[in-house]
Length: 510
Image (cartoon, rainbow, N blue to C red; front, side):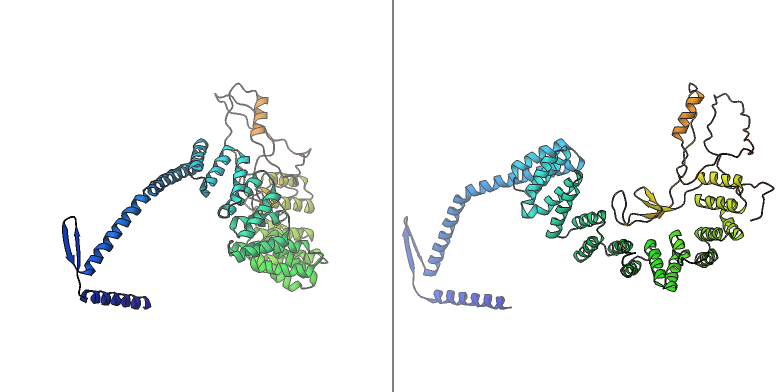
């Protein structure tokens, strides 16, 4: 509003001044080149001013022609440089090393001070495998304020390729101090977790949360795992701090089974048996897990075998239809020598149409051993367990373990373990070999191509001396050459098999 008033005021003053000049009497005469001109002073002064402006503009234009020519040349050079950068970046993206190097040289000649020129040169050197040149370019980037972070990230990647994790960690720390970024924060965090430095990792997570470079849900999960790791370390030395950490972990990640199981055990040691039992019962109802079952049954070390069986039955009511509940009751019943309860619990798992897992077969083998001392049935259940589906285990990066750990032993990644059932590898049909193969060579070839895995904890016992010999049916006539097939382990039980057959003298109802 003030600017509008000032503008109107200037226009009014100019109009008033022009009106005063026009009202003044007088004349201006000019005789030049045979011409005589009579006019008013105002018109004459206006003509002189216009002529002066025109002459000044012409002189300025003449003197600026060299500058225009130079500016045009620089614009063309810059356009050619940008075109070279575009070609080089695209070539580096598709992996064309030679084209990327040529474009890098051209861009470096045309645009030596452009940040993208350094980036293209580094990418071309990386494609060519010239790590020395790449590091030199990245070091040059760190000397410029506008490309320092880019240079630090490049040096960090090169250090990781060379296996120099200490240098990579220092570079990531320097980048994190300049500006917290996702890659630097994750790199620092991964280094701390790989070194089992849980306190430093917790501080790093909190910094990442404040910088808003990490997902809040993922950050809470990371803090829960770190709290559990710290609680495992101070479980014996400082149980009060361990309980506090585990409570926070369970609150952040209720599905973190190791935290719940450990918290239940620590609460029972402290004397809070009811609170620990309630905690495990709630978690077991959502996700039945053998670690929770073991922690619940062993919550009171002085319990008798009968008390342990009673606790197992109580926890099984939280998830009555889950196979883990039946196996938990069966194992507790075996400890109490209650074979009727153990067999009743395992009957639905080995009934007709079911496919028992290796652990179920081992429980049945132990049941037959303790109740009847039936060595034939024990061997049959162990043999069946060697071919049965594997039970769920903790798996991280292809490595399996019976116990949970905060990080992967292979990569050092936090929270890598997942409770999974290993996949069964099914081989395809065995192709018939060429007729020139000898039977002995064929047997060795098939044994190499189609091995059958046997778990290390399962011992295959030799057949009993009084066991009946297996008779093979006579081969049918065929025009194709036949060779004997090797028998490495007993044949698998069909899916509809109700289970191992008992001898008449030892047959007992389930």
